[in-house]
Length: 153
Image (cartoon, rainbow, N blue to C red; front, top):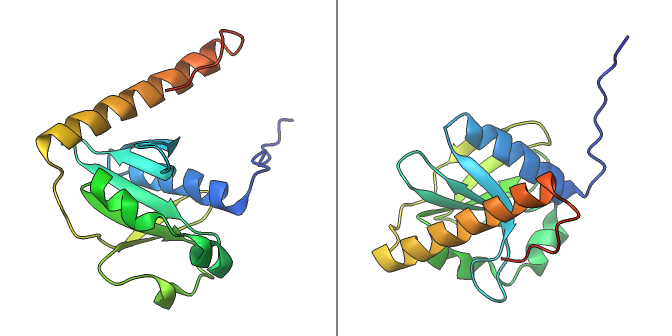
């Protein structure tokens, strides 16, 4: 008899990423992980909504992970809404007010507080959508042809 087991042997932040992507799928968002919108920035999750809205979700696995983050404000220029994703044990009072909050685990996520909307300018939106599309296509191509070369976007 087949028994399903969790084969996700990864870091806690990566487990949050998976749960966030699953949770946002229920809102008809598609996601990519570890996207680099600009040199020096790496977004944990970028989500693209059905109306073209772009959300960035920064996953924090604990207090130390949050305290070490010095880049999160740089992500605000690359999205319409910004969220933190944390697990149920995280001290949410540490998170800055005026940002979105998602509670997640490795299997699902729930939006607790919607991040404020700050619409991207047209030129920036076009650049972000191009980056998103190339990143997603590169990931898919790498999965379909892992020996096809190094795919850097």
